[in-house]
Image (cartoon, rainbow, N blue to C red; front, side, top):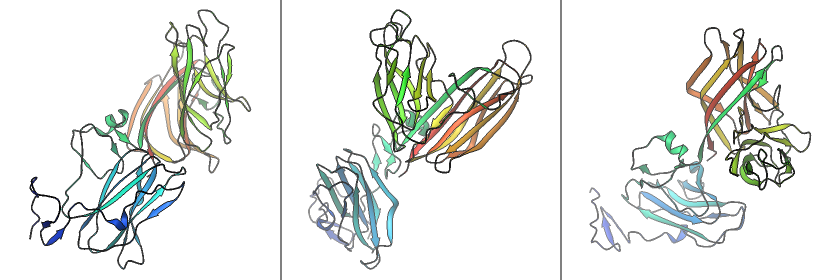
Amino acid sequence: MPISKIPSTTALDSVTIGSISTDYGNASTDNSTTTPLAGDATYTGTGEQNDFPEVLVMSKADVAGTLYFDFSSDGTNWDSTYPTSGYACSAGVPEVHRAAVGGRYFRVRYVNGSSAQSYFRLTTYNTAGIGQLSAAYNQTMGLDSDAIATRPSSFQDEVKLGRRSGVTGWNKFGYHSGLTAASGDQLVTAGSITTLPTILTTADTFDIAYDGTGGGSTDGSGTTGATSLVIYYLDANGQSATAVHALGTDGSDTTSFTGLGINRVAVYASGTANVNNSDITITATTGGSEQAFIPAGGSVTQQLWFHTPTDSKGVLKDIFLAANKLSGSSPNVIFKIWAYNRGVDTAYEIFRYTMDTGSTNQLVYADKVGFGVSAGDVIYVTADTDTNSTVVEGRFSLNVYQNQ
């Protein structure tokens, strides 16, 4: 007998759907809980088998965790888990997921994050014909969402607008205004790095240098220039973090945090100049290697250099490269894109393009498949020229997906 739509006036207790009679909407007591979990603890429900073809789980906690659906053909051997890596549940966000049970045994399993919960609400419903879940127009879509979007959707636009949880779109851009001949591969950065970047393998604090002498063309507290910075970096565990740093008055600060690398620094607040008046250079406290650079008047770092978090992977697709010499001969420039992995301490050349500026001075490239970026990879772009004072510019875009 087909399942018919339940009229809105029908009471939700003791509804008959096809040949199944149920207190429709009642929770499964064997797979529901409100007891908060300790850090890294797991709640495992009790296996149950019934005539319902579907199961729906609703959960919410103040600590991020992972939700699993476990299935068994005999109630003893739990050989099937859905999804394989679980549903990533954000702190404070209600989650709703469903799955087909058929005649199998089912139990719910929830693994808490590292912090103890102050509240935890998980309810399991045995259901029949609940229908496809849908996501409202103004709702953020997660990578593991069960719902069909009910709005017109441009995936890339929604990533940039923050409407797709678990994925972040990055645009990296930079330039080098004076490559020298016979110097080999040189990092495309506006900073003072003349060859390859120094990639940190141990977390360190960062020193921030700027012109803090006071007056109309300086930066720091009370000046017309930059007064604070926002820093996007990888923390000591290699995961994404953000910090706001208020500049001092002496032109030399040290961050209160440690990190493995910096993806972007931008002026967070400024005086009447509305930009940073002086160059701002950020170096590792130990060894002094340059990790970020904001040119005077730029307000944001200018370097083709990206650190992938250790809990994420990425796909790089769009590349723009350009080279020129403002006067004199037309240089030949060899551009390379590298992926360095800390785990194996090795850099891999993943892209190369030789540009003869006598015939063309730019490359716009969109790879249909994309370049896979592994967890922890550091992506950077170099240029090698045969002519002094060569100017190069570039940009690449990538999506970074959290492991789920």
